[in-house]
Length: 112
Image (cartoon, rainbow, N blue to C red; front, side):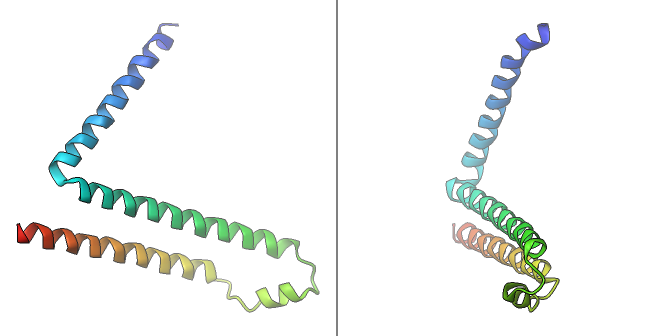
């Protein structure tokens, strides 16, 4: 029972710690840098979710189609490593965004 009493204090101290980290990042690196990093993180998470969903939908679709359907014939034209290729392209795009973001930060910092 004493452990249940400590949970609200633990949660509030955790929230205070996260808040102080965010405040430190905002004051040290600036608002634009923080917002850009959050954008890249969210964008990458959305792309990973999209590719995972696409992979599961293709897997479900291929197992439920009848053997003689035109849809299955059309999907047979898609290579078996299409999801891997899409993942590589998405990862490269996220890395490109991070690179351009870093170059933009360097330009701003070197002009100052």
